[in-house]
Image (cartoon, rainbow, N blue to C red; front, side, top):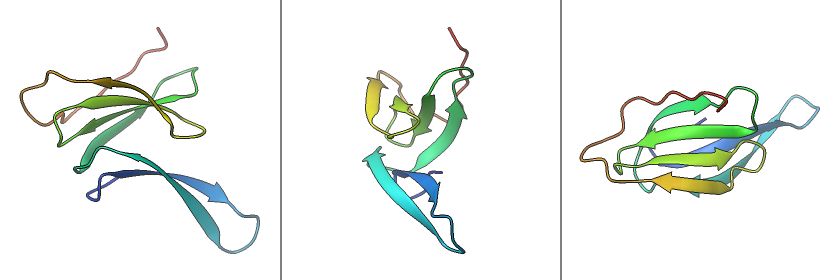
Length: 81
């Protein structure tokens, strides 16, 4: 999940009634959209920092930052290729 604090979170089941989260990289500004890359262990995000970012789905380590946008990235879509 992701939100206004700019953080992406990976929610992990702890096997009991509670859960725990692992925080990872940040856009630094609100994350506006997320999309999982079909067939890959990748997640694409778009943010209010005018970037789209590619993350490892399992660790949430940053893979690539796509810049050059002139405004917030309000939509993202991903394909396996």
